[in-house]
Length: 432
Image (cartoon, rainbow, N blue to C red):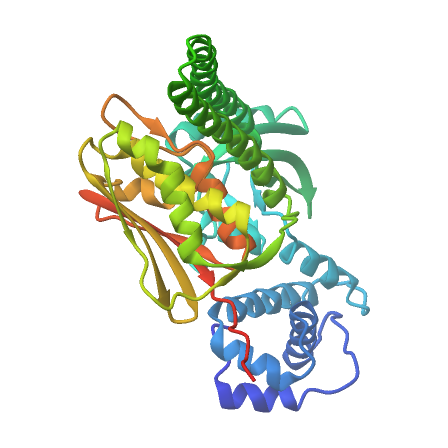
């Protein structure tokens, strides 16, 4: 059953009887349709047949799921001794609609059946029955599959890791168990994505390296600054002492921001933002960010262009978190820009949003890396080797989202990049 046309579908569904029907052997196609539709309606949280008919019209995946349910119902209806309560059919529905991908093969790895999640994961089509599971695996996963199938000829269960051709960047843990169904020996494959679990040790290692790198440099600078302050005071050189004190204070503030960002990433990922919201003026915020970034800009001989048009709206935000998010974007531009180039920090009122952008003239970010740029520890090629964004952009993304906004990247892959924080503009207070 590929599709129920809209008019005929509404007539059939609306005319369905109110009482439950069985799925005993010999149940009519009409009874099976009625029961399958009711089960699908319950799963999708729908109350009327008209609602479900509209869903069928608009979602090919739902039509395929209903067709699968009808095939299962017909299969059960043809089996002698099936109870009229439909218990077996309900178990089949539980298999079909289960949250975990399940695939059934024979001992040679030929696919006999898969539930909805399994078909989606593998990319199985209607004509994929009796195809080999190996054909859906990355090449390096096929030998482990063969070994597992051989092992299952004399043991009940094996566990292995596989990569699929449909998503080779992710790793699936496959628990394969030998079962007997209708006097036939089959293998049940239960798949679970373990990519995040496998990446956790690498991310911990990256975090340690990040902390060592980002903490060592400012700590050394702070110690040098304290030494300079001490020597200047001994010589009663107040001007140099004040200059060293300002530099040391800026370094210690950087350390404090790094620690706060690490804590904020953990809180925001856990859904515990704990925001201190208040109206924030973009003009004041960006001016302070520019002043804080001035020493780094000067050290790399970069020119900062600050663009703040009149009439910018305020935003309701956690000022300290937003300050660190914008400063992170500006610091990244400084870190990746060539000496003597220009960096632009600007704000604009776009629709109902305040857009805060940082534009640089660095070599472009490769298009293949752009979808991953806001992930923790994402790295891009740069002169002198790959350089990591650490947690900076991941923090910026989480900070924007916690304020009901978003962050975007524009880069053609050749030269120049623009990162933009989009934040909902606060409603202006009404004047009497």
